[in-house]
Amino acid sequence: MNINTNEQSFCYNSHSGTRGAFLSKIYQKYTGDLNILVYPFCLMTHELGNRLGNYFHEVACAEASGLHFITVHHQWDISGSFHGHAINSTSNVNKKLFLNSLPDVIVHANPSNRFHAEKRIERVCKCTRYCWQDAKAPWVNRTDSIGKYLHMAFDKYMSSFPSNATTTVDLSVDFTNAKPNQHLPLIPDTAIQYRCGDNIGFSYMYGIMPFTAFVHRIPPNSNFIYVLSDHPSRAVHSPYTSRCHVILQQLFIYLKKHFDHSTIVIKRGGDIFLDYARLGTANTTICSVSSFCFWPAVSNPGTSYFPLTNLIAGAHTNTTAPNFGSKFRWIDEPIISNMKKFRPWTQIIDVLTGKSPMPE
Image (cartoon, rainbow, N blue to C red; front, top):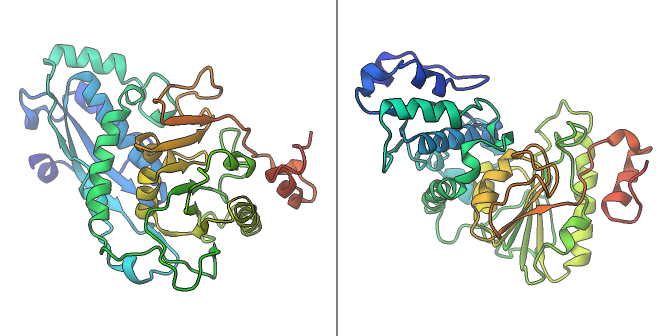
């Protein structure tokens, strides 16, 4: 494409500038009379939720404005796509297959003329950064489109695994009650994202979920329950990261007690694209506060749960939270983010397990 050849590529740190580029007609010499939103697809896997969130917002912006959509200048840093030791089936998976399966050209079925497109994009695409927080952003009413594109990528990505591929366990960091040589499917019945290290004490929008929130949300017939958490190497700068081993160990004990018939895996690290597919296709998905988990959860045809948080479209309370359909349900149990209330810090375990109330 001429844009890729003739225009200098860049990787944005704040916002992509896509809306401004359309309004200022930067690419019109290449697009001619076609009204096209041109998006530089810059992505780093250590910010996968944020960067894919930006992509989905731009796709929704084009759809709402009556614009065709293309991506240019693909700059993908996938060096953070795997944490831990690559073992058997996952080691040969094409890490870019998922990203290559997301559409880079979307033709609008009923495109606007230039005048109406400019008016629409000014009106409906005011947000330019972290737009998953904006209750008025165009993606809020277009999660069906986002889900369609995500599942195209999921299907293509999962087709790259051999039919006998299994989930691997690294016993140096993971926990499981699986029997030796037991077959662990790639996709569990219930997938739980339990973001720990950089979710504790991060801000009022973030925090960790009490274990009690899981008991009545995990279906009792779940044969396989996978908890997907951050690898110990993530967020090593955080003063709380080292505490995650104890917290996750206690979560493992808690889940074994309440789901003693289930095979449980607490998986710390691994292929993040496989985790993405698990969260997007498991029968039941339960998220922490995280943009990484939100996009597959809101696209999952099964049942998904997500904590109330201003991180997503101003969903601070059930009253302000958007309705994303009957299969997407908000978790109203309070998340725990202020670690300073716990002295010693291990008191948090009693709160997480429901043995003690939250300290004042």
